[in-house]
Structure formats: structure tokens, C-alpha cells
Image (cartoon, rainbow, N blue to C red):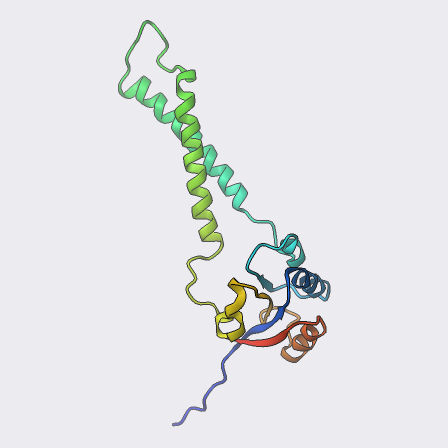
Length: 182
């Protein structure tokens, strides 16, 4: 039995733009046209791109807050347990749990666990490490780290139609429009 070769699946359609302002304007027009699943790529952050793409608010700030609070509470409770239960020592009749003495270490644990949560949360929420992505199949994408500005509309978007999306991107005055294969 002979299987017919299958065509590669389409990941989306990508357009390149001359600068960050053109990329921002294109992302806003794509969002206004009803596209929801899209991503912008540029060699540096473009002010306002998150809003232009309609990206939801990240949960990272909440994760960092929870991590920092658990670090501070954990640091304080660790000291209280060590000083009052594990190895109590009465120095000059002072109380066993003297909270002013616990402030520096509690602060340091708050910062330490908050920072670890920020790094690990950022890596996890960004889906990293990602050694391969379908946009790497587009030869022109290699310029993104130097001077390339790209907008990719994914095929998983409810409004995506290969020819219609290509036509829409061509109306935005791009340098080029490319099909991205998975």
C-alpha cells in the first residue's frame, strides 16, 4: 500500500515590516480586524505591543507576590521555631520570640523566594525552553535578532483563512508575506 505524501501543515502567515512603528500599526489593524491568535517578533521591545496584540494580563505578578509572601512568612516561622522550640535560650530575660531581631532574615527570605518565583514563573509561563518554533522555517525570519520586525497570525485563530489572511497582511504594506509551515 502506497501512502500519498502529505503537505506540511500550516502554522500561520507571517509578514515582515520595516520598523517597530509599522509593526505596531499592523498589529493594531489585525486586532481590529478580529484576529486573536497572533504574535509579534522584533529585536527590541516595542512600546504598546502587548495591548496591540490583545494579550491577556500575565499571572506572573500574582505568582511573585505569593512567592514573596510565602518566603517572608516561612522565614519568620523558621526563626521563631528555632528560637522558641528547637533551641530556646533565655538571654537576659528577653522573650524567646523577639520579632525585631527577625526582620533582616525575614526580609531576605521574602526577596529570595520572590526572585526565584519570578525567574521560574517567567520560564514556565513563556513555555521555555523552546529550541524549535515553526517560524524558524521562514528564511527571512533570521533577521529578527538584528533588524527584522514580524507579525505572525496563527492558523489556530478562528478567523484564519490562508488566502484571506495573506490578502489582509498584504494590505498593511509589509516588506513581504510568508507562509509558515509546521
